[in-house]
Image (tube, rainbow, N blue to C red):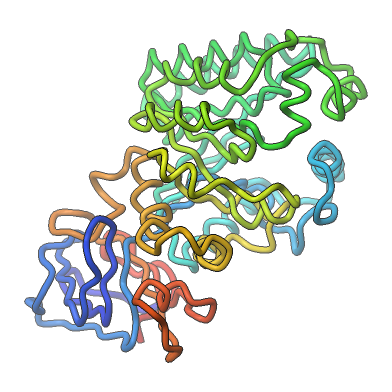
Length: 407
């Protein structure tokens, strides 16, 4: 891979950064891994990738890298989530997988090749040591849907919190979902997050079946749990709002999906955007055939929305760039500026990394994505940026080329 010097100037035919207007023919001056200035080239070594856009490195705010060796998604498109979970459980018990280290390593390589500089990964197995330039945050998944798992889950919450607080790893705790984790464990996770100032990541309001299970304890999720000897831990009459109320006490939470939140729940998220980030996974949403995602409603309400790929169990690849292109193609009412912000700054804020990445400005870390334009004419620069034919050609983290090429 091409090696970059400690000091250099990088030309952007178009520079895109959240909260700022696009700039033509801008030079980004980089020294010691950080951006020193933007404008004219000040360093003696220049890199000019041609007709390309430079934007902040992408942030994948919800991933399951354990699935990174899958050649195609599990199950079939449009299948009910409980049925798909059955496929996941069968895959996990099949013994035909590579090691967790290899699978996560493969996912990191795929991420670095696609302009991603930070990822929130949900880890379902034992935490592994990962050496990578990526801002890799591992959220240890906690599942406790049976009596036998309950005590172990509480112990795991405590152990993960202590490990993160001691600085031995980056990440947080992920109480999986309302249908797979007893409320007492959610409460313990929130309390430990408060005790140690660590983030949480959860799945919430992903399907209508989940809402039915919360309301009266019936439906496909009840059957899934009963088939596996799960305890009847859920009192009837709950809604996603009950879980949002709990999570509002945590310092920071990534809330994956939220496909079926009510208007009031969306407004609650907006009112708590300082500590809650909703993560939309566009192509996984499409894979399961959900109702149209209320993205414009969420943005208009003021909710902080970031973007995730989910995993290759429900997505053909780990390209966050293709997620942003998908939004541009399917949500014409959402402006390009908002799409860029969701894929960069909002995810950085959700991971408490916005002081380092998420925008291109002097003093920030030089963590960037380089995107090659096509010659297709468009109504504006954002439409050209997110055209289906544009592609990421290089990824830079802290001034170092970690994916692709600038040549």
